[in-house]
Image (cartoon, rainbow, N blue to C red; front, side, top):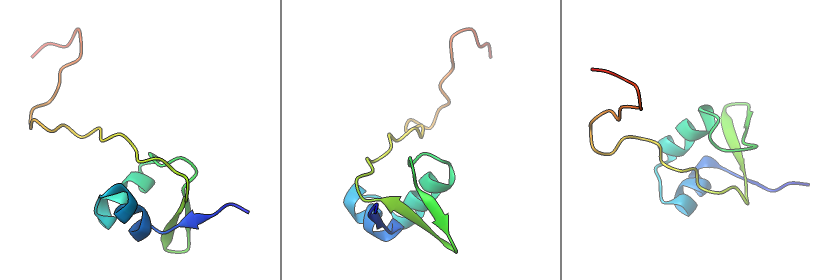
Length: 67
């Protein structure tokens, strides 16, 4: 049987807030996380997702985009 941890446990492990961990799960960024009742269960061996948020405060333009 697979072992799962709560969002609170994953948040401590990944050094994130519980809310951010929940958001990552709801966005599908945590592989094999499952929603049971009113909470997310995260595989105990899940890796911390890469932070894709923009840190500079500016949107990054992709090649071929114009202003």
